[in-house]
Structures are given as C-alpha cells and as structure tokens.
Length: 235
Image: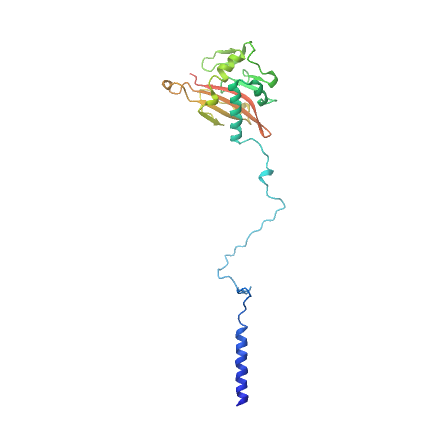
C-alpha cells in the first residue's frame, strides 16, 4: 500500500513539472514566437525586387545650374534691364549685352536680318550722337526709319513707361499685330520677356497697344541681352 502511494505521488510530481516547462516566457514579459510558425496571411507569390546598381542616385546639387527654363530669374533680369532703359543708363546696360552677338534694335517684333542694326558693347551709340541712322522699315506705312539714336530710343525703345507696364509675360507674346514674331528663327536658344500696355484710350478698343520685348540668351548661369524689340498695333 505504501509502495502504491509513493508511485502515485511520483507520477503527480512528474506531471506538474512537465506542465511548467510547456510555456516559455522572456524575462520582460514578451512571448517568443517559434520561427517555424507561418503567417496567417497567405502568400501572394510576389517576391520583393532588389535592383543592384553601381551608380549613386544623382543629387540635385550635381545637376548643372543653367538659367534655361528659369522664368523667375529671366523675369528678374528683364526687370533690371527695363529699369536701366527707363533711367537711360547706357553705361550699366553695356554689361548686359552679349559680347559675342551684340545688341539688336528692331522697330518691330519681326526681326529683319538685312535691316536691323546690331551693336557690339563697345560700339553702342550715345544720346549725343547726331548722325541719322537707317533702322529699317516702319510697319504699316512702309516708310524708311531714319533717326538719330536718341530719336529712335524715344520712339521705338522707351516711348512708354514700360517699367510700369500692367502685363509682363515670359516667353509668351501678348501684343500680336499683323507681323510674324520670328525671334526663335534668329535666336534658337533665346528666351524673352514682354512688357505690354493693352491700350491707353478706351475709345480705340485696344488698337493703341504698345509692347517692349527684351530678348536674352543664356550664358552659364546668367542671361545676356541680344535684342530690344518694339511692338504696337499697325494697320
């Protein structure tokens, strides 16, 4: 009888010890998950793709900094130049002129390679020059334009206060007359800014609009002035 009792006690102790070893807890209270346990979500059969490359992704700072397409910088340059034209500050204007292509003066938004006058920075006339120059043919009338530099400037460059023009557009012509705007044919890589007055007399219904167009070409991270165009309504 005593022997049977000892056997029962031994069996009970063995069962208790086995139950205690069935749960394995970490000291921090978390429960280890067996690595062989599969996810409850079925696999979609899609494996992540890893692309190996020896080339580092380009940084924005590695890209060449050019003024092309930078309308804000272009407009800023044009506003500065139109301010110089308002002040008649030709000495400061010289620094803006492209040293290779010079500065073209066109009495129309249609450039004429045979008639337009082009000046290199060191050859730009002054307001003191009294000689009459041939600047081309006037739109509408077809009359020859023969004026001193001062006269031309006051009629075809800054005949209105374009620095205060209500409309300033970048690479878009607002004032359209009956002539072709052909800047891209003469300066393929150029950009331009138009200073436009839609009109002055309401009775004329916009037929007295005036525009000043400044044409620039990129040079490294700067802009250089290559042409000054005059636009207006013509018959």
